[in-house]
Amino acid sequence: MEFKSDLSQIIYDYYVTRILFGYYKFGDTLPTISKISEYFQLSVPTVRTALAQLEKDRYICNMAPKAAKVVYKASQDALLQNISEYLQARKDGIQDIKQMNHWLLRPLLEAGIRQWDDVAWETCWMEIKSNNFDELSFAIRLYVAALSSLENDLILNFFWEVNRYTRVPYLHSEREILKEINRNEIMEEMIQKIDLLPKDEIAAYLSDELGLAYQHANTYLVLTTQTEKQEASKEVVQIPFAWKFYHKRSQIRYSLGAHIIQEILSGHYPVGSYLPSLPQMAKYYQVSLITIRRTLVFLADFGVVKSYQGKGTQVCLGQGEMNLSHENVHTALKYFLESLQFLALTIRSVSRFTFEEMRDETFDELYQMLKQIHEAERDHKLIDVFLTFIIEHCTSASIGHCYHKLGKCLAVGFPFSLQQWTAEDYQRMYTVMVSRVMKSIECRDIDGLVEQWGRFFEEQEQYYRSLIAKINQ
Image (cartoon, rainbow, N blue to C red):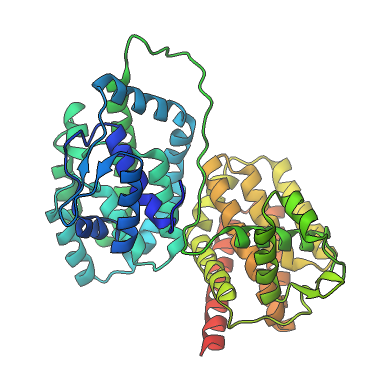
């Protein structure tokens, strides 16, 4: 299934799920294109692309200018089987995401709500609570509105991906789910509670309620999928959560470019050496020749490599010139800034979650890694070392996966950082930070560590956002 825009896949998956799981049945009418565009805050052409693919796959019949109709037919048993197979294969991942909801999504929601002043909040809240919840669930609408206020595509994409994976808010209207498990009064309770809460307490309450919503929906689905033919003890291969970035252009060049930059930094491709031939790289990275060419153009725009006719492509990280006018560079720097903001908003809760159950030996491992880069005068590897440590030791696989992706975005921005650093900036941002972190580890000062990393990423975001703004003036 190929989409002109990956954003359209969000809409496609949403309606495919609701059709396969029985929310929409044969002959039912989907919302109008304008309504779908409003629900998802996506453009009308993006909606049309998704609906065209739904029609091609024989789920709906487009009847423009009228709303599309469902043409998929299935028995009730088949619908229940669809639900059962999907959830059984993601049981472990959904359980992990319940945990991730508190440590990762909650601080993002808090930050989003803080963006509104009291008047803006009241306006948004009135609009959300006055709508029915048959299309996007109540909690999801509020999350999307709040996260959108951060103006960060990576954060919003991550949230959509979480919900596409769990598909809990896609399955049924919240009112029907809650009615089935005798909790049909909870919607009114939530509205009344939020009406009375101070704005700064809403995120914590809503985050807890969204966690319960996963639990309630799962209870409902378990009740509706328990059939005599199902074997409770049957082993099912689990499908883990995976986050895919969305953008109008292909993401392969950015992720592969980040990987090559990381290999350069690790010494796999030393500065001054030549990269393997294009066919060799295509085989090694298991991508097409055209993808390799586009990736090398992207890296050349960033001053990471330079191609010479008849000689090949030479690594010149830190020596080449950067083409800041190129779209590839603008996109990569956008990801770089958004990943810094993502980390600045979540690193305190994630690092605390990771540190609190950690053994002394594990803290010592981090200390030794920091000591090594400090003695080698490579303090700029601080972020890479720390994120790798979090990824390896965080007990939530979904958080680890998220931070792995964010690390890729930061790697793409490293060539830019290398050209902009002054000796004073480098000393202040990295060398001093390494010393502080090592001292806190020695003292086992978890509160100090958490706060140090929080301030560090906030300063990083402010520094680079200001720097890029000046360059773009």
